Length: 108
Image 1 (cartoon, rainbow, N blue to C red):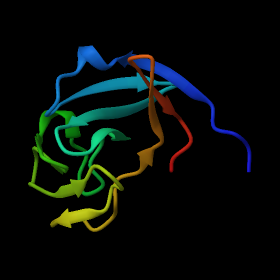
Image 2: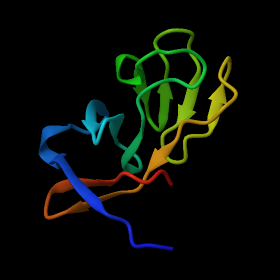
Image 3: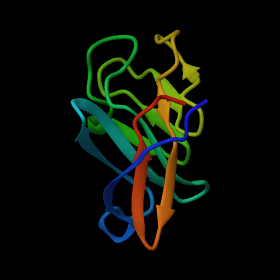
């Protein structure tokens, strides 16, 4: 397995705890979630149920809720927590180095 290639995305200070921001990296739209409980996570920004931008939904603890039909996902691993979605959201490895959030573009 090849080593992951991390890309700087934003500073940790730019995204308060309990919030999220969309970013486009190498043509992929991802959402960065900074949770109060579990740290920083990166997922695809498009709901697997219907074409909705997850960054327009709500972040409740580690639950990301779609703005269109209310499907919900666990930001830690992308698994579905509530219908109507049945497929998980792809996630991406994240690390914080010297206050900079970095994301590896290969899905976890």
